[in-house]
Image (cartoon, rainbow over all chains, first blue to last red):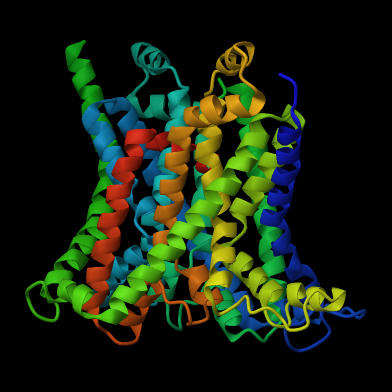
Length: 267
Length: 283
């Protein structure tokens, strides 16, 4: 079909919109280089002092490690639970199974503020407020559905006869799982693990309710910095976060490409 | 054969069980507790819900929330349609570049993005300074601490969510139908408005509902860009819990929001397989 004028114009417009989506985040870069002690655009002079402050500040470094520990632990739990669950539902393959699946995706669609309330109400009497355990449990529940989705998508491209063949050849249930099923759904598991980590690493609303002093994750510190709206260290932190996001994005893009090349095209 | 199939299903449920138990214990249980609170705290009855009619304050917050969500949805879907349409009509290379931009914006932390808007839209932000320097305006425009700022931040956040279902639905269109329309004498615009647009209706409905659902519970951007001046339900709930400790009111609003979201999801599932919407979401 010949390209019409309106479709050409729309293409330019779409590029403008896409740049509008990405470009605003870049303003963190100049702001983080300001030589002033308050949030401002640098005028001619640049300084790395805010990065220096970020990397030497005990508070920011401790938040960074807390987020990393919580993110990795929650992602590990979520990946294990989500993967098992996806394999289970794939085996069950029934209407009832699909109802359960929809039910298990609820943590993704329930507004975060409601999840935050629910977790808060649950964890106050249990003494889990302001603890690693509380945040890890909450983030596991919120992140595991993402793993369920990515692994289920991988399983959709997996031939169940392979599993049967493995069983017929005498492999145990466990061996079949480890040697036949898991290797072929690895891209889905990896993608799920990455999404789960990012979901926890970025999570703020539930964290606002469940953390106070002892546990102070990176998003929590960012939130405070943004609220106070003075210290340019926040801008430096934003730049670091963007860089980390890009690294994970590239890992996942490579992962998706590899799985497209090897498997039947399901990601 | 039948026995082994049953065993297969049995072990299947066994694998589902750990996560199912966790969700029931840590998520569904506490949510039911919240619903229960909405009719029992501070006293049993429908008093909390009655406040919806009697309190101007509550009605105002609900109205603000719905108005902002509707406007956000309209802009996000219209802009998202443009992007999705361009994406299915460009060469593979451009499409990959467009998809990368879309996904990168999807991945950047909502806090980082909100912070950026703060830097751009403030009284001394980049946008106002530039406009003053060029001489278009003399007084800085008030973008922040009002609905305009909240809307800009929200639309910016929601556009990618609108694009994904639209993209899924546009990719399913059989292009021969369009050729048929053209060869039967319809002009380009006629083909678009009378054939293409109706064919993408499921995607449009799914995109609109998805954005609306996500907007309803959106907390971060309205709280920061609204600066306390634009109070939406999610922020109001958090104030009730963390500051004024009125759990009954908070629970009532949460219940309303939850039932609203579930009802909209149900409608959405009539138009599009939810797995298609969420499955495409981050992959």
